[in-house]
Length: 432
Image (cartoon, rainbow, N blue to C red; front, side, top):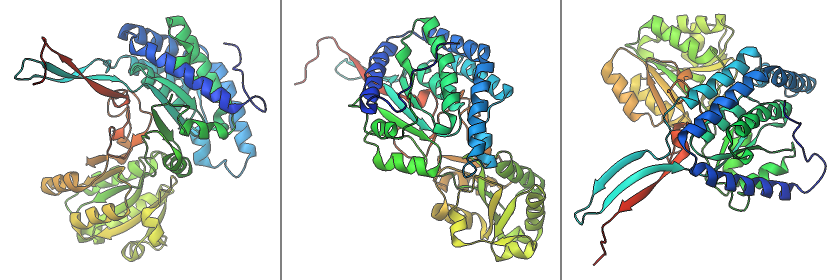
């Protein structure tokens, strides 16, 4: 394994260290802009190989992080520990994910549109790297590999600031990635991690490191994302919350609805695409509510419902107004009856977070209305909200879901980590 990463715990000037990271990243970004696709792919292949080779080092570091987290009882909930914990399969999946990204088409240099003007000039729009991406994330150490691979594929340098709870894991994963970079001849500064747990480092990143950082991507809880959105002096790709809905229409197949609702809520309750509210068409409440509610309760899910839902099962707790807008990230779901597809759309518009919402129905007209009118980054018909994932979109991986409407929306993969410029070729034209 590579030598331990030098840290600045309790020593040195964090501001100076962070500015140095920024300068290194900016220089690396310039080099990556000119790096041909085969060399980037060779680096990704070497990175995946190094992650596999050093799997035991990564797992040992992660075991220390998990042990420390368990001692901090105020943060060590089941969902938190699930996000933090790595095992052999998850480390293998990290390496496999890097290989998938390597196999994607290179977005850099792709001409997305071209045309010729009446004066003979040709104009083309071509994809270019964003430059330097700053990524601030919590809990999930696997984000280190996913984010690094995607940024490198798109020709960007990246500065990674993992959560303090995953500090050792992030360092171990980064050491493997750095080994792959060196083997392929790319600058080590192309993928850097912040070498301190001190939260002051985050503040420096949000200020942009003297113009070095072009974009910030936060990936974590509402507190982190809220801080980034409030304090960042550079553009941000993010979503504040994932208040995701499944609407079961009167024309839905009950069997399909049960399968989708159970998966959307309970497959992984701590992911941003987990369903947090179930809406049921009032026209079928008498026949659909009870089986849906019973299924969820039997699966270990707490239900907070409106009056109609509570009448279907005495175990349902009363929902408050706050529940309709809550991202639980746990085995809890709010359930409400609505007046058809119009009522579902109105509820989602009022309480939703524009992340991911699904309709279950065999009525194509209702489905098209839902797909057209629900203003979310991801809208599904007859499918689980847990497909809100870049890998499931064919992006290889993602560094997050963006719910804004500027530049990137939905899963942020390699293509979304590029911008564009116009290239114009003339034959001596001047403007009259």
